[in-house]
Length: 290
Ligand SMILES: [Fe+2]
Image: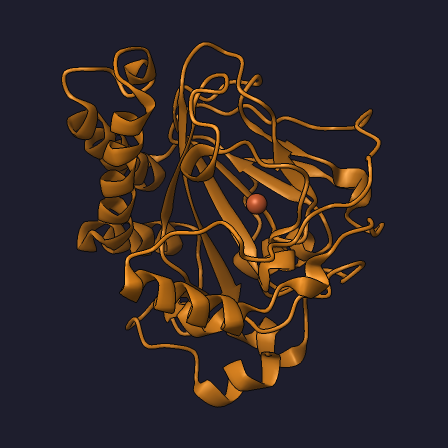
């Protein structure tokens, strides 16, 4: 059973412990989250000018749309202003500057229908982020930006937080994936032949939850929640942004969501940076998690 907390005043440690137990936290828009989301929306608006980003797919070929996204998404990811906005969010939410580590923020989009059939804006079947070598203590911070509504948003399958599903996460090795990606980037080639984790069964969707919050709001949840993205039939593209965090004390002490079916190898922790000074997680700790 998962509890959904709205605008909770819990301290960061209590919140984190509840989230690692399967609870989901929802927050209304507030100045720190609004600044982050406004920046993302402005970047997207500029990239698609003169079109509204949510409607642009109706005004250009898919190749052109994908080309704009492939420039927009890394620009958001690497803009130094975004890291400052993330720090303001962490401060606002009472996170410990020395113990909290974050990875790069990502902008996601999902177009209506089958406009983009593969790759950059694909609908996502049920999965846990931990299947992609996310740590069991990983928290996901997810923010709707534009056009998000129940017909295109993230879907939680909370009944599976403590119940394993048949999957092939065991074929994912993060270190191998990084090496292959680097090699492919160096050769300027692109292939979709990487062995990614996948669910291998039908799931009971009768207790699915879609949480709709306003732009600038926040969903905060365990990376171990089974979740998916519904096919988008709303008539427009939706945009969201997200990033992941871990608390180093959790990593070191072995606190985390229960591992019910994750068999991935390696760890993403080598990519995380400290809230206070952007230093990485010490190598010895990362190595012990892989
Ligand atoms: Fe995910």
